[in-house]
Image 1 (tube, rainbow, N blue to C red):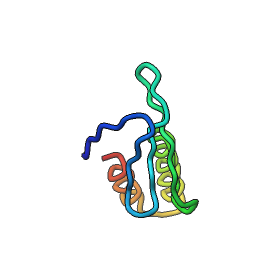
Image 2 (cartoon, helix red, strand yellow):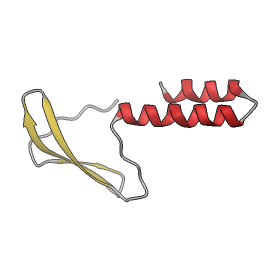
Image 3 (cartoon, rainbow, N blue to C red):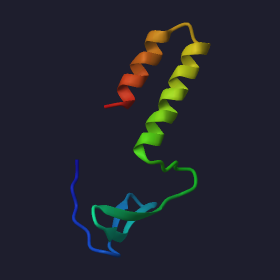
Image 4 (cartoon, helix red, strand yellow):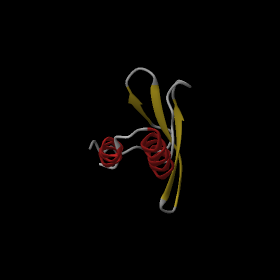
Length: 78
């Protein structure tokens, strides 16, 4: 894990297409602005995990190989 310190207004670049800007700090919360292509999904982690779980469960219903779906679910939670 890379750990960075940023001041208000400073950015972090991820590749050529993604920029994360520290917009505001209030108490223990930081507000981030994220610029990325529309083709890249950006989610809060708890929302992303729910999406992955729903997708795995949906594929398990349509697939006889439930062990594969369980393995995918474990892999995404790491």
